[in-house]
Structures are given as C-alpha cells and as structure tokens.
Image 1 (cartoon, helix red, strand yellow):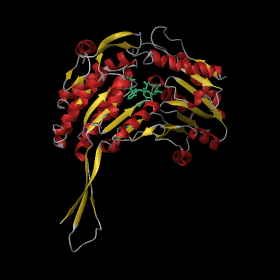
Image 2 (cartoon, protein in one colour; image 1 turned 135 degrees about the vertical axis):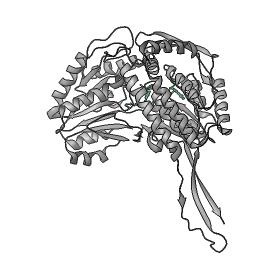
Image 3 (tube, rainbow, N blue to C red; image 1 turned 120 degrees about the vertical axis):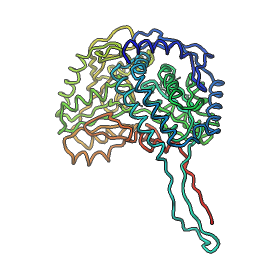
Image 4 (spheres, rainbow, N blue to C red; image 1 turned 120 degrees about the horizontal axis):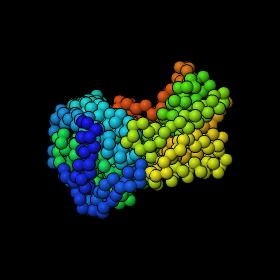
Length: 494
Ligand SMILES: NC(=O)C1=CN([C@@H]2O[C@H](COP(=O)(O)OP(=O)(O)OC[C@H]3O[C@@H](n4cnc5c(N)ncnc54)[C@H](OP(=O)(O)O)[C@@H]3O)[C@@H](O)[C@H]2O)C=CC1
Ligand SMILES: CCCCCC/C=C/C(=O)O
C-alpha cells in the first residue's frame, strides 16, 4: 500500500468509525468524544462513547455468539484458517494501521510499523497454530472396586466462555491482540474495551477480523470510560474471564470484581524494572541497552528499564554517555520517521511524568534534561537522573515516561538486594560478560522475565507476565491459550 493510499484509507476510516463495533457494525449512539493527536493536542476525529447499557448489550451479544457455537463449535482448523487470514489482512493493511496508531498514540511510525503491526502479525500467526494443538491428557487412576467397574479418565480443555479484555493506551492494538487472539484460538468470544485516549486502531482491527471471517458478535469493541464500561465488564456475571493490562491500582479493583462471580482473571500490571550493570559489563552495549530499554515508546512500556544499578567503576561514564545521547535526540511528531523523541499519549501523562521529574529535583537528585522539545503537544525531553538514592520516589514508583534513574553500587549482593527491594516484579536485565555470573544471578532476581545483555526483548513463544504487584498470569506461548480454557476431568466407569 503506497503512503498516499494509506493516508486516504485513514481518512476514510475516520469517517466510518463512528463509535463502538458491536455485532459486526459501528454504533453511533452515545456521548461524543474528541480523539486527540498527542503531537498537537488537537482533535483527529470524534467517536461516540458507550455506557453501562451498551456494555450490557455487548456482553449479551458476545454471550449469544458463544452459546450458539458459531465460533466455539467450528473445527479448530477452520478457526486457525480465519486467524491466519486475519494476520494476512493486518499485514496488507499494515501501513494504514501504523498511521492510525501513530496519529492517535503519538509514537514513532517506525515503532508502529515494526512493532505494533510487525510483531502483531507474527503474534497472530504463532497463536493461530495453537488452535489445532489444544490438548488434554489421559490419566492412569487407581480407583477401587475393580470387580464392580473399571475406570478410564482423561482431561478436556474447553473455552472458558465470554472474555472481557480491558486494555491501555501504550500499545493499543498490540496489547488488544495479545488478549483477543489467544482467546479466539481457544474458542472464546470477546468483548474489548480500549483506553479512552486510544480507541481507533482496535476499531479497525475489529473490522479486519470480520473481513477475515470471524463471525458477527464474536469480537466486539465497546468504547467508554473505565469507571462505567470498564467496571461493568469486570463485574458482569456473564463474563467468565477478565483480562487486563494497566495500572496495579485498577488491576486490583478488577481482580476483586471478577472474584465476586468467580470469573477467571489475568492482570498484566505495572513495573519498576531494574537494569543491573555489573563491573565486567560491556559499557557500550549497556548504554545502548539503557537507551533502548528505557526510552522505547517514550518509556511508556510496562517492562521499560527505569532504575539502573551501575557498578561504581562504570557509573560516571554510563551517566555521561546517556546524557550525551539524550542531548542529540531530535524531537518531532511520530509521523516523522526521523524524529527520535515523540510526544507522550496525553496531557495527563505529560503532567504526571513532569511531576516525577520535578519532585526528584526537589528531593536533591541531579536532573539532566535532554534536547529541547516542541512547546505544542505532549512532549517530555528524555531525562537522566543521577545522585538519587534507592529509597527516593523516582527510584521506586512507576514513572511511565522517558526518565532514566542511575544509582551506583560497589557490592553485588547489595545491588541484588536493591533490585529485589521493590513491590513490582515484571522485567529485569543483567549486564555482564560472565556466563557464570549470569547463570548464578538470574534465578535470584524476582521478576517474571529476566534478560541478560538485552532489555524488553519479547517473542510470542516466550511467556510474559509479572510476579508480586506486577500481576497474575502469563501472556504468550501455549500458556496464553490455556489461560482462556477450563480444564475438565472426565471419568468413565465401564
Ligand atoms: N502495564 C501497562 O502496560 C500500563 C501501565 N499503566 C500505568 O498506569 C498509570 C496510569 O495510567 P492509566 O491510563 O490511568 O491506567 P489505567 O489502569 O487506569 O487504565 C488502563 C485501562 O483500564 C481502564 N480502567 C480504568 N478504570 C477502570 C475501572 N475502574 N474498571 C475497569 N477498567 C478501568 C482504562 O479505561 P480509561 O482509559 O477509560 O480510563 C483503560 O482502558 C500509568 O502512568 C502507568 O504507570 C498504564 C497503562 C499501561
Ligand atoms: C516487542 C517489543 C516490545 C513490546 C513492548 C511491550 C509492552 C507491553 C506493555 O507495556 O504492557
């Protein structure tokens, strides 16, 4: 698709996408809301937001589409073919989707093309394969009464039913797919609520899923606020599984609401992800890793590196090289592929991140602010903080912005203690040239994923999800599909 065609396709889509996508069509009723371009702060388009009544209607249709078996009773091979077609359509319309994501979220078009679209296409193809590989097992049992009857037992994995997916604004389309595709692969039907700020790309996804052959009503998108639509979806008695990515605070509320009706839930929550740079690390690799792991998507990544424990022999050079790098980065809208610094998603996020930086300065840390950024739009210049201590807010709380906080250490045991001294446990990285140190230290780090000499490297086959306050459950791999199934035991006497 040429750039001009893609640009025209985006404008046509803005006209069509008037609101939620339910039972195969856009719904225009509801309260109008401007969708903002973060690079200007001005409206891109407008959508109608739904309310509790629309959420109820969407759940009812999603339940009907599960109960009548239009999806769950299809053969696994037929579902797999539809999901593969969905991946093909995403790829064919990739430039349009990437533009929608960049215009709405603010991120670099390079990330939208390579990650939000590119990774998603690979992810769907990987997950489609599991559709035909969902397995139970036979079990040898020792049940008594051998003279009266013999027994055979086995397990079945069956789709859990209606899934509610509630997703954030940092990777609106990709994180939605991380939930919708394994759920569909398992035979579930899905109602999805995007973040208020970023409703657009998932609406286009829903259209493409329908075009690929996902039957009407099997994948619905309801727009609306977290307080109304989000709360209703998480407490709705017909929802059998809630899957959420976002803040720990809201994750806890969703977990409590789901437990009220014993719905299953998975929570992919915040992080305060450490990068531990040992004395023998390759400094250049570690600096590049910090820039990538900490500033990718303007640090609006749950697994972003945000606290850096660096051996004191490397600390000053590490900080200097980070500072030099941020001083040269050019800011601009995400749609400009040359711009290395892009706006954050919203004014709210800009204000929140700036607050963390200002308070770190007030608490006595050294704050090095990078190259200047435009006054219009929601920009924050990449910032390197040194001279902070491990107990300061900036070293403990999730900032979710382009802020790198560097803390020196001399003793590896003390560094490991600081790494683990966090309520979070999503991702962590260890930087060392010693295989032996890597093998010894990685099991001791409290995180769902530990990288060595890399950070935020993901693959659809590698389980992803945190420990402690970073969440419950895993995305990716066969674990993700199994998380949308119930395991049933069958026991036959004969
Ligand atoms: N793990 C991650 O990837 C993410 C972590 N975060 C962290 O959270 C901070 C705040 O971001 P924020 O956008 O407020 O995150 P939230 O957790 O509030 O939002 C995530 C999603 O949950 C919805 N939601 C909000 N309240 C409820 C509710 N009571 N019941 C059900 N759903 C709800 C939101 O809807 P709505 O948009 O309408 O409020 C959105 O769709 C960030 O600074 C960051 O630290 C944020 C996003 C992603
Ligand atoms: C595939 C490269 C990076 C993806 C980043 C994923 C972030 C997830 C999240 O914030 O939840």
